[in-house]
Image (cartoon, rainbow, N blue to C red):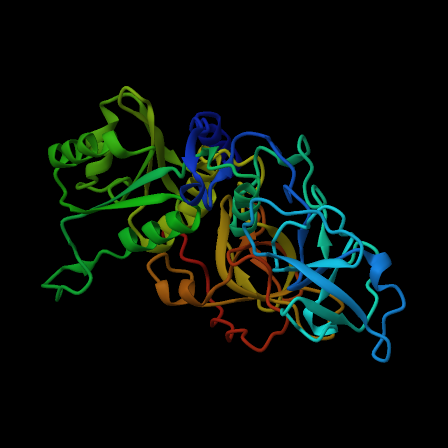
Length: 432
């Protein structure tokens, strides 16, 4: 039986980031930049007006006030997009719109609110602007040759806007990994279908598809595959053409119908074993096909499958996408508010609700939620963390400090939403 760290290290050692490719800006949104971007030009490209008003020579309006307005001749209209302008001479001004180029000779823009707004050849100006007022200078935002974004930057709306501002329409990015989810089990039916005798809805397919999306993948969920080794192999072979990573659930334990082990063991490229953890002890990992596509085989119990995904598959997806950091969920230390037992020799991952109570000076607390069974989704849905109990700790007491894996980013600020503690009882050492 290997440790959690050993299994994770083996997995990540075989994962290579996907090669970058060029994408148009909107298609690059949400992806990781794979190049350093240097500004090819100044932003703004030319001096332009920040206001609707009048482009003036400041010397011509010096001392202007409500009682003694400066009166200037309006010699041109300058709309946004104007290709040419004429020079402003003494006693002259140009009526200018926001974004329009500032004409030669002008060294300030007077907002229209400081004037009588006339457009009949002359305008009265009632205030003196500062030098350069309301002029956006060439290059004041970005200078040509300036480093803009570094490789590894995640491209959100603000970064896309900056790239557009410097007129980049194509950028090199890491693609989102394409992840195929396959649920196995003749007992499974689609949600929305009335289960017959012995049938259950396919929980794992939907849970893992959603989790893969949250990790940044493009997800293809394959319909349920019955317990038939040939059918499973055919399904996997069909999916290899569009998969950067494959995840199966079910059929990896020691039962008579563990079809995933039966189908893949003979290939020699997928290893099945046990990881010293609960839930999720049976784990398999390897590569398939000419492209050596990674495949994870997770247990069939839904909490086991989810925990295995969080610990092993999610970091692999993040590495495929080229992430240098953020492979793993954040981990914090928290004070446990309730006691429970834990199996010897296994790292137990207990569903919990972690909070930062008001007035606690930053102390984080965690409360177990739901039961320990690996089939119990109700508690998992309430949880916002996994409490990681070390392998050598068989008893957790209230007040113990334990590492917790945050599933929703940072803990909430108050304990108002904390769920009641689950009734204490021994962990089910047989749960996988």
